[in-house]
Image (cartoon, rainbow, N blue to C red):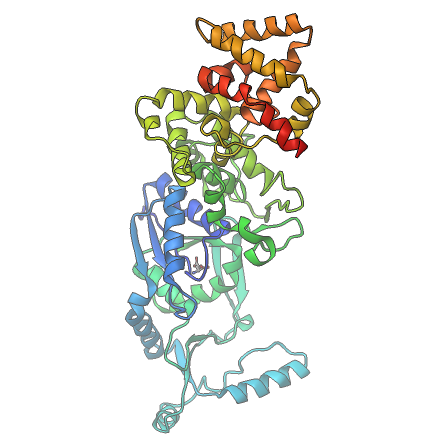
Length: 496
Ligand code: GLU
């Protein structure tokens, strides 16, 4: 069996789109599953639209996702000579010809076809020029493009798509397409094939949006005498209205960078993306890397387009709810050391990091993350909803402030009293703190819930969270006492 060699060949004209990331992921999975190679090729032939920034963004995005490649990045522009040599070979072998038709002539013919309601197609004027006619035109210095000579006998060009089955297209449905422009620059369609031949690509796994190219590319492979790779066309990812998802209409949520900036765990995003266009044939949705490599097969790539749920109207779901729930699953279950690393990066960026978290406070740091992660969806939540554990400048949310603090003005004296009791305890742990709080409530003749909810709000700013007495221990006696003593500020700020 020939070696599996797959490729990811992005055009660096923008950001890494989640659809592109999904393509990269499928190729990566197939390479890892088969022990093959993944080749990264930057298709930068369109010099005007390609940018260094975009290349860096794509490489960073792939690296962040953990999708490593085995060869490359190769740059298409480094192989310009190969592309032109291939065009020459096609001219020499009679599979292509020089076309001297001017833009004006072509436009005129196109208009006429349009008026006659006929298919718009090049009429083959230059197809049968004699060598003398060509030489004469060249001598006059007339510009020309190079066109591929599509067979004109009846028949079809065909390939067996691994997902969609046999795909056929009649020759007379394909016009003699341009492979080199009049400025001497080869077209993408040709470059892509020449590079895939040179890189010995065995499987081309890409979106169905490329299918209109594939039949023409099969003609190129055949004319260049190269083996045709296995084609695998994946369904597209659309929104609920069946529109392509793009930054213009959907905003940042279509870019991999967005997920990185919003506290996604890289593999969780991969896990979400694979379900858009592939199914395991079981109910399983969560796959570790190893499990997914094991389970992956080209045959289970879907045929129909998948839906990316776009919920701009609902701020709670800042992207597809499934993506968020998969991310939360990883956040809640991943090894705490790994989570510690991810949160560290975020804390460093936010100025919340303390080097002691890597040293003598390491156990405290990790156990606190573990204590609070159960309600969080992204790593960003640690610095926002979990801020009170790591800094004193946390926000008291409006809802608990009204419900648990402002409605009970007596807490203004009760919580400082509780602080005094905490200060007097021999040892400060869950049990002793709970006993002290309940005793105080009993003495005051109030429901312990009022004290406990008030305390939760003052100490964490949140309506809900871990068990109250676990919170006390995580925060430590000094911070608890300080915050409870200073409850007054909450009333005065709200009165102001
Ligand atoms: N450069 C093309 C793109 O970014 C790749 C097409 C292909 O996979 O052959 O869409």
